[in-house]
Each structure stands twice: as structure tokens, then as C-alpha cells.
Length: 102
Ligand code: FES
Image (cartoon, rainbow, N blue to C red):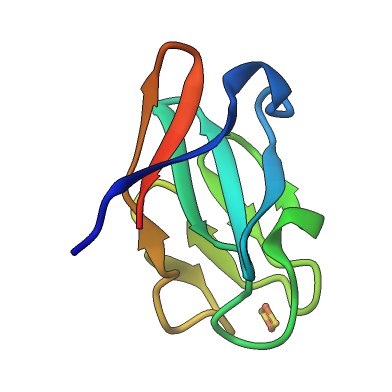
């Protein structure tokens, strides 16, 4: 059974960017998108890159290793060599804190 779990303060996000956060042994990426806050596992689905090291434009995250592209709001791959979707995690904001359903 998944439960809403506290992750971080919204104030600690890098505005308009992808912020790396660890939750236990999980490495997550928190995206401050034009449509609100979205969270995925931080590892690229193509290889061993942390997507938070890539370029984020508010909608799409570009992998730093081979420039695969993902929509950070849906996880869908948008440009090769990204082929598999990101593992997204449901997120919400309550009282200035980001919570994830995990
Ligand atoms: Fe991300 Fe290859 S590791 S595109």
C-alpha cells in the first residue's frame, strides 16, 4: 500500500529546474514545471545518468549523457535514444511541502 510521504520543502526547489533528492535509497528528480511539480526516479531509462544533471526547460528534461529527451510531466520519451518512459511518482504540495505517493 502506497502512502503520501514528505519529501522536501517547495522553497528548497531550484526554481524552474530539476532538483535531485534522495528518499532513503531512492534517487528522485523533482521538476518545477510550467504545470506544477512533478517527480520521477532520477535515473535515465536509457543508461546510468542522473537526469538532474541535464538541461530542463520547464517541460522537457534532456539527459546529460546522450541527450535523450523526456516530458517531465508525463515521463514520455520525446527524442532518441530515450525509448522507455520515466518512472513517475505521484506528487502533491501540502502546506509548502512536496509529498510523494510511494
Ligand atoms: Fe540518458 Fe543515454 S543515458 S540518453
